[in-house]
Amino acid sequence: MSVPSTAVSDEPEELVRFRQQWIEEVRGKKKVSLQQDTTPTPAASSSSPEVQPPSHLPPVHQAPHRRFSHGTPSSPPAPKKASTSVTPAPFGPALQRAVEVYRKAVQHEQRAELDDALRLYRTAFRMDNNVDRAYHMVEEEMLRKAAVIPSSAPLKTHHRKISSTAGAVDVLAQGIQNLGLNVSSVPVAHVRGESFVTGTLASLISSWPGNLTFEVEDEQEGVPIKHLPDELLVMVLRLLDHTALERFGRVNRKARVVSLDASIWRPKVERLLKPPQISDEEVFEALVLRYMTDYRRVYIEHPRVRYDGVYIAVCHYIRNGLGENVWVNHSHLITYYRYLRFLPDGQVLSLLANEELAPAQIIPLLKPTLRTKGFFIGTWYLDGTEVHIDDLLEPGSSETRYSFQMILDLHSRPLGRWNRLNFREYNSVHIGNGEAMPLALKNERPFWFSKVRSYA
Image (cartoon, rainbow, N blue to C red; front, side, top):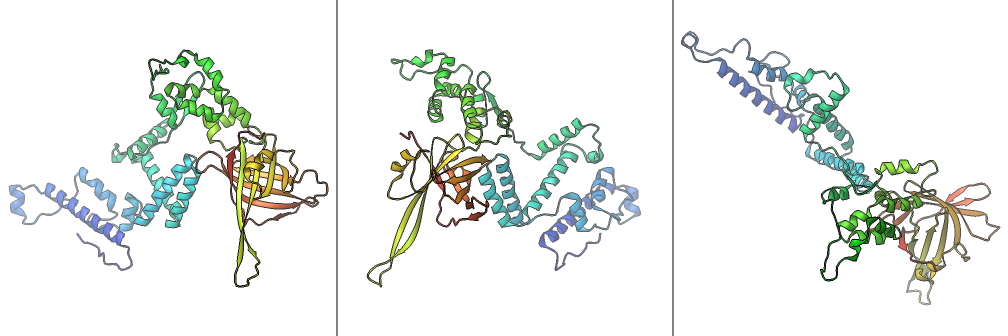
């Protein structure tokens, strides 16, 4: 059997290694077939001193030669065609690592973890610019094998025809199982009444027994709440805010199950998710269905601007000063604060103040009735995770020629939910002609949420 030369200077090392492996595999199979077909008999051994290959191979050995050969059995095929008929061209180690990072980014995006997904996408593209194409090639090859070549089926099933859509789905599902792919699913658990919970908490609750109760920590004191009906306990929990409600749910399993009742979380979500938090066209029921009617999850995970506090930005810049000594440079660190308070009726209060008054003194005064320099009142609405603030005007001034508008990005980091606003745009708008002029954001810093118990 003739062996093609592998000393080609311009061929990659992986292609040369693949060719050598293929040649050794063909030689081994050829040797085995010759040994099986030349069983020693007296007539054959005496008539021919040299063993000749048979005219045809047994059926069990025809598949490897049909798979790799395109001409005579003794002539090896071109390595390029052999590799494309078996598996896609192998990727380098760097590209393989980039594909794995890209796959993790896709999984984070499917779980709505957009920050982690964006970070991994950027990392993957820094490793290789064509990582998206390589990932799609790998996924298409895996799906093709899953749908056409189940691992438990023989080779002849390549040309099997699927007579129905259900059969195609079964073959695809079986192929995915054979490839070891995990189909992501959101666990759902029924709590009580019409209440459902999803996610990790659902997996935990489904493993708990059904007859939960408030256990006694000290037998001498007893548990009076144990004798309280669940219906009455739920009515009491409706009066709590989400912080106190979650603290109660951490007491024990019984408290957690009762605190997940839909009649507690649904009124909170209905009061919260209405314009300007959502658009006028968005239907509340359709929004809840996206979270599988888990109202607690809607309250926690759906983007929203918080009403129970103020967003504060602490900004700094350095200003050069003057002194009597020309050999000494004087620099002043200037600190100023920006306040944003969002109201449920669509109004927003904006205040720019210096460091003379601390936030503890400013926040109780931040009401629509405030009149001071740097105070503006405008309108706002939420579009996804973008907060749009328009028509910021100084109240009580009739000669104002300009208004201000902002576009901010709403985020949840590092602890808490929807507690950060990043500046994206800040414009000055001429009221007469509507022309918008962008303002510099050099010294601006993000707004961080600060909860306010009372404005009294």
